[in-house]
Length: 432
Image (cartoon, rainbow, N blue to C red; front, side, top):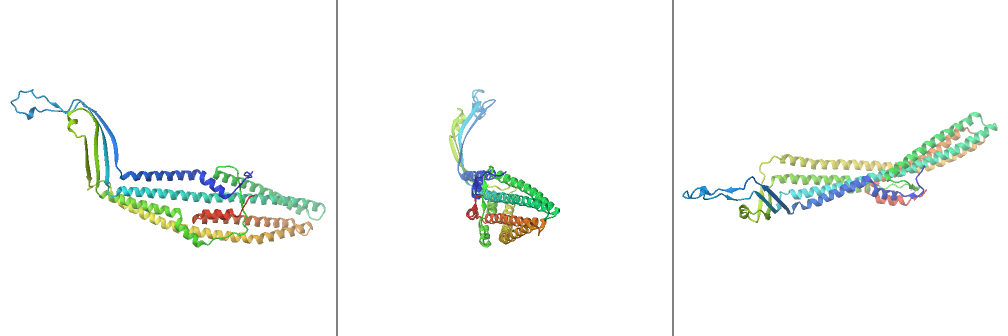
């Protein structure tokens, strides 16, 4: 069972994954959310205007008894209480306020949201690189599994022919019965290995299809005969300058710095404008006495608070130092990872080159053993061993190419060189 015949380049697979991956889509939505929250924070320093309405129904009107304030010569009961309100009180008004100074907390809140947005964007890039490396591993894993299955099937074909020849030679009395039995056992072992290789291929194909969320598409072979290894120094410099994990901690440090400014703002005064304008009110004496509109200035200065502002500042400073230390550790770990992957890539390239001579020797040895066996000068086990050595060398070279490509993808993604990686790969891709 295999993928559809249509060839699928690694770049095409990546473009599909980059646009269709549920994990990346979730990260992009998180980035959009952070962007919207940052834009919302831009309005914190602006004015606000609201429409408010109230309605009250009293058990009795609010009244003012003037009898006690007038001369006692007036007859009792002559002066009635004056109603200041009706039993129904209602009012509709516009209320506005405009913060002029908030101790720097508005600017700090905006800076925190900006840092959160940048951190989320870096988180998206980290996830993209993770998906890129996973794609390379599964894409070339299918090719490795397919080559293994093909070599195992070729081995079955060769050993079936060998078993048939062994039976003929036994019938002619040129070899002993044990040689024919050895050939048949070797054939059975090859068939078992071929079935296992087919199973591994199906699993690898399913893993790639699951990642891409689509069936079909035949990965293209990386057909370069020589594997180049880029110098490590420029890659390491690019890592320090561009890796999203380091930028993520830079953003977290700026986020903590904004939190420090916001917490320090709790010690500072606040100044703002406010005002109201009455649109509709009940018809009462108290309403007539109240002004239609008013504006004013509000000033507050915190003296003693119960919000733990001192400890809040300490916590924000600790968060800043934590982000700084984590960045330093992350840079150290990333440098080490880059160097180790670069060394793994170099070793894989060297092994790939060395297998050319090994394969040539194994092919010649197998040819000689086959000729010798047909003349009764070599045993069946010697021919099987020669055949096994050739298959092992061919698989070894295929695995070295796979290890090289995995390490190359790691190194290039660590240094932010994904586009150059695709340029190198595309130049040597061959449709199967």
